[in-house]
Length: 237
Image 1: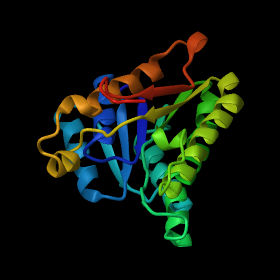
Image 2: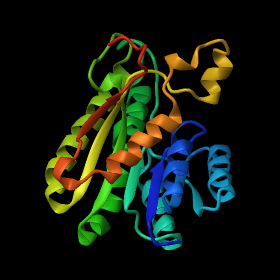
Image 3: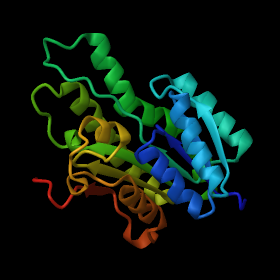
């Protein structure tokens, strides 16, 4: 391989795997991280089956030590990441009086804190190199705190603020930070199983989102995108 490394924290059979495939096509070695061993193995096999290189590492995005340890393994096995994609998240529906403090805190760590844990591990090498890309997967909840969505919205609002703060701090140092608002449901195996008759046109294609992520990385520094919102053509907004 050519030394280019992209790392994804939050790899599953939907968007995470699609992003891995897209960057592998550009010659990147992939550091794949998630709690689910099954999802990691499937994504690694896809990348390797297409002739790419992938390292699968179990990691809990809600645990700072787990994230640090996983990224150290990626550095040892592949090298310092040029691209870091944070794709982890958690959803717990419930009203303010229904959510437990533990549920609320767990969601915030998955939706926001994990991105901070990961970014502080990859940023030093990016700064030293003078280039790098950090992409944070957001949601509609980053813009609107709906009733019964407090656990999700609070973390996603925080993730958006983290992106803005990092972009202002590290953009002048050559690091492109982008926040992507996913406005709609992603077409995943779980969604197709739950809604087998749903039209594909009403969901977001993981491969189409991954293409947008690649384009964010490939952007010229004179015209960087800080925030990109993606939705199906049929989605109301």
